[in-house]
Image (cartoon, rainbow, N blue to C red):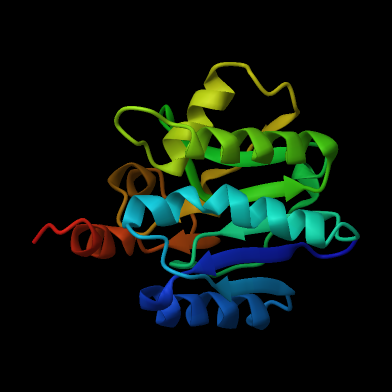
Length: 192
């Protein structure tokens, strides 16, 4: 089986982090499509661009069968075993009841494209208080609106570097996320 292609996008202030992600993908021999995108206007607007980018890249690269989205602040520490997830359209990690979208395994299927299209449309048609992309995706999945084959990733594929629950469970760090948004979100939202 062909190796997955790593997908990510980032704004200018994440360049150093994205370079680390690229280096970690290279270290394990994974092809990658990791590109800088224009600033979308705010931290939350940048998060809402995620499904747009993923869908565009999957459509543009229709001959590639399997992708792994990793947020730009993530790194690959150990080889990734995608075989258990090849029968699912999309696979993600839940931490307690919260969907984590820092790592997403994506089979290039019609059902995956349908989910990405729904996610993209919902991100841009929100009214009232605007939610980040992860909340929008969780609402779609929890609402049973998609109908595709959903896989549950092992938590080591979306390991948050300082998460006490994952620490207490000795979750390995296959793909580790460093939560750069904690720093940049405050800056971009005008908070100290």
